[in-house]
Amino acid sequence: MRSFSLIFKQFSRSVLLIACFAFMGTYAYAQGDAVKGEALFKAKCTACHKLDQQVVGPALGKLITDETDDKFLTKWIQNNQALIAAKNPKAVAIFSQFNQANMTVFADLSDADVAGILTYVRTEWKKMSAAPAPGTGPAVVVDKGPSKIIILSLLGVIVLAFIVILVLNRVITTLERLLAKNNVTILEEEAVAGESVDRLAFLKKLAKNKKFVFFVLLCGTIFLGVYTFIGLWTTNLHQGYQPVQPIKFPHDLHAGAMKIDCQYCHSGAYKSKNATIPSLNVCMNCHKVISSAFGSKTASVEIHKIYDALGFDPATQKYDTTKAHPVQWIRIHNLPDLAYFNHSQHVKVGKIKCQTCHGPVQEMKEVYQYSPLTMKWCIQCHKRTNVDFKDNAYYANLQQVHDLLKDGKQVTASLMGGIECGKCHY
Image (tube, rainbow, N blue to C red; front, side):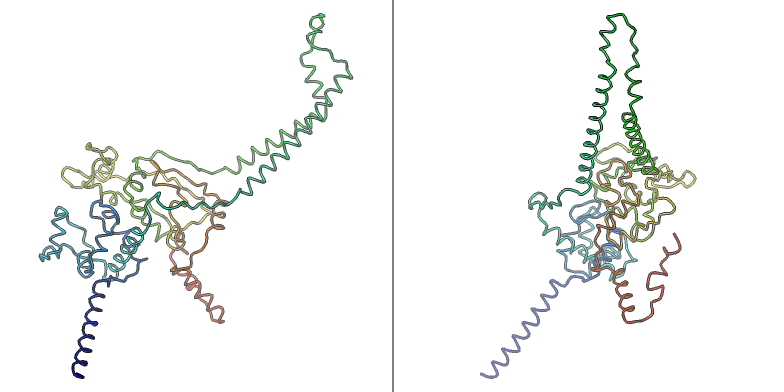
């Protein structure tokens, strides 16, 4: 009996151990860096893939979440063509399912990079699946109350109107006294009597009234002062500026309907001072295949302007560099030389969305300057924007510097970002 209990214990332990390994094998996804994976996904994948819908390639959210074999996914992303050539069953099935379209090879991505991308996709897909459908959740309205500026402005208008009424009453009283003192008769009666009428007599008497003249000069001074202030305040302010570009690029189609991430084209926004204008080679990632407008069967004139600028022949799929010429884009957002603005500090460190400054570009047929870009506007944004210290390497570095200062240790300029490229090269 005792030997039977020992055998049962050993058997139960083996079963539990096997069950644990099976559980871990089922749910052990790649635990990579989701933040780094997000940056890599936006830079490498968004041209062909979305999480919730098929673009050039399949929707990746459910596909990657359902697939538990991360080793296969890693090999597929790094070199899918090698798997197809080796007759891997999964690879051949995927290749056949999507009309034998070759996927780009990303041999430069390490296993850790791919793990980060997989973690990001699964995390985002879980959030999207858990989120309620638009219009189903209760709308939360935050009542912030009336603006102090509006209240003060209304009080100012009321006080100004009261002063104007008092002044006008005094003027009317003075005019009535003048009329009674000089026995002014009605102009029509004098005309009937045949006497000559001085049509400017009324204005002449008003000009002799010192109170009336003072009131007119005061109103004129206030009007000219306000006009001058508005003119000086709006000097070099180009809000609403929308120049005609050499190629009409519909942001509402690309960033809106197609949901292409801003940083796919403006890749410098998260890693450098300037957001950069994308080269036409980025456009050709899609438009080498797509030559017509969305929903149209005829060739697009605007897309052919890209072909002409690159010397590309869509019929032969070849480039003629002798016909290539640069596109003369017109810059929309201009800051004075005295103002320093770094996109990476705001996008990568501050985690600010592009629409915060550039407005709803996903709804713009043609981009225009949405914000005034004045010092006051920037300062107001800095005052109301909360700093997110969580999972932020930049602020973690600042915390390290503060800890060193508390301990009485020396802090070098490099710890304060003194060796960053943008400190000198801007």
